[in-house]
Amino acid sequence: MSDARRAAPLTGTARPVAPDAPMAYHPRMPQAAQSLRHPRAVVHAARIAGVALAAVLTAAPPARAQDTPESAKAKQDVLWAQMEDSIRAIARGTDAVVGVAVLDLTDRRTFALNADAAYPTASTIKLAVLAELYRQHATGTGARLTDPYVVEAKDAIPESDILGGLTPGVTRLTNRDLATMMIAVSDNGATNLLIDRVGMDKVNAMLDGLGLRVTRLRRRMLDLPAARAGRENTASPRELVALLDALHAGKVLGAKAATDEFFAMLATNKMSYLPRLLPEGVRVANKPGWLDGVRSDAGIVFVPNRPFAIAVMTTFGRDHPQLELAIARIGRAAYAYFDRVGRSSALGRTMP
Image (tube, rainbow, N blue to C red):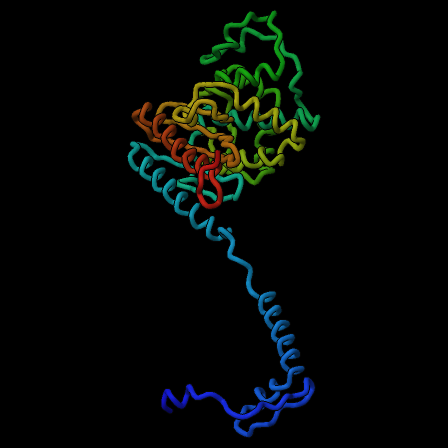
């Protein structure tokens, strides 16, 4: 068809069509289009189209969220793997057997390295003695924190830095005072008094009740004949973390007030390894221990929004400063993960 023909004007006179009159049927026009030639049909079709469009819009999927739990966890998995790599590298570089257990008290994720073997606990076993003392006090079934004791001359043994300097027959203490000495300066004389007062069998029964089989109190402090006879106080990193977890969850002491008081005692300022490389002001409730060839530390690090339990145990060591530094570095590697996650949004932005 030429341009001239396409542009030619229409001729003839148009006939007016009544508003309701049907338009003429054209045999080549599709039936749907034929029906739309009626004005009322056009209005009706528009209404149908509007309803259909609304249905489509209503059924459309919601806008994608900024992040999903799965995506957030995937990013945290990367950071967790970095933490694991760091801890493994520190352990490999330490001239000793190193066992580690870390538990995220928020999402229950666990890291374990040589964590199920029995290790000598040294003074870290005092954590279990303290737990049993507080359990008896909380349940009213034995020793009380307020029970009095008058110091005797026989109580002074090596490494009783406080108890050994008190005046026998005159100085009056409570079990809480003895517990403070046991935790703050690891006083062995005070520990032995508490073991006698709460009962070694009761400490082990409490551990049995939590399903802990490796962690065991078999002798008093500095009982070398018992140690030479094979009666050693032992634990595994995994079980120490399990004990701390049970205490933190209120499964041992019940009431929150009793649990809070226990961890306040355990957080008493002391010389230890886990907090050594952490920022000033980070609250750590822990109990270290040391013997020849052995260094250990276990506790809860109360990182804001992301607390975690950790136990590091070493044995067959030769270089004691190296063992102590290894525990501190492992503590710092774990802290770096929990501090970063605790400070960040799900997308990873560090929040003010």
